[in-house]
Image (cartoon, rainbow, N blue to C red):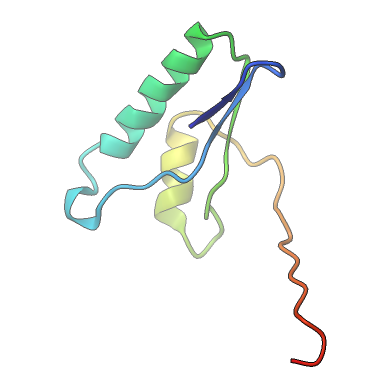
Length: 84
């Protein structure tokens, strides 16, 4: 979790739970606790950088369960070295 005090916003990235501990509410508890901490520190907005695409329904479900909603989708761009 990153807190940007100047812009009063926080970003959660990356968010994950070890496969052996999934489906126990740990990710949800961490997100909720983190949001309480950043709110107490003055944040008014929070974002999450995620793999919430259709191919990752569990991640999307987790973020939606704590109140996040889709805002934008990034289009990663890569430049390779010329000639190779």
